[in-house]
Amino acid sequence: MNPPSAPRIHLDRPLAAGEVFDLPQAQARHVQVLRLQPGSALSIFNGRGGEWRARVEGMGRAGVGVRIEAFDDVERELPRQVTLALGMPANERMDTLIEKATELGVAAIQPLLCERSVLRLSGERAVRRLAHWRGVAGAAAEQSGRTRLPVLHEVASLRDWLDGAHVDPADVARRFMLSPAASRSWRPDMAGEPGQRLVFLSGPEGGLSPAEERAASDAGYMPVSLGERVLRADTAPLVVLAWCSLESNAGSPA
Image (tube, rainbow, N blue to C red; front, side):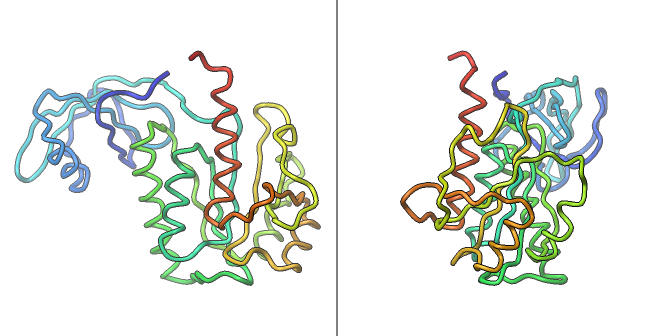
């Protein structure tokens, strides 16, 4: 099913057909910028699956009223869940990575602090940055037509995450570590059957240290390269996500 033509609004709240309410300030401003009028169609989603058809009920200087009309149980997710565990790139590169990964259908993102990380977050600063990244993901979901938001986990050190990420014996995800030095190249047949959950671990600028690569290998991560060229920390994870996205479209009608 194609994304709706009506402007999309993300609201992090329960929704129900027949509700009438005022949009929060940021979303109301978005509707005002689009110059929508009473009666204009909207598509509203809360990131938990499906979306609601809605109408602008009223426009005013102080706000925008909307009426929820009906729920559409649509799903636009990839056929397999993909988690990216990322050594955080610095500056705006992490924002861009989250935006593009959301567009491509990532299910979850785990920001990691590694030995060679330039961006080092902790405490209140990490909390604020995580809230910002969730906003970036919400905006990307609005634009791309997704009805579910990726899970953005709290920042963790790579060592702590590896120690705690593999305690569930029922977890059958296939795990890969992106490494330019790996002797084995990534091949699509490594992903298994459609529906198989995948986890990709990728390092920050400068890559994972030899000790971190050994720890990841011990935790069950298969080292794979993505070809002869060395890709940036914010490029490599998107390559495997792009393949997963193309895979999902392979059987779709033209």
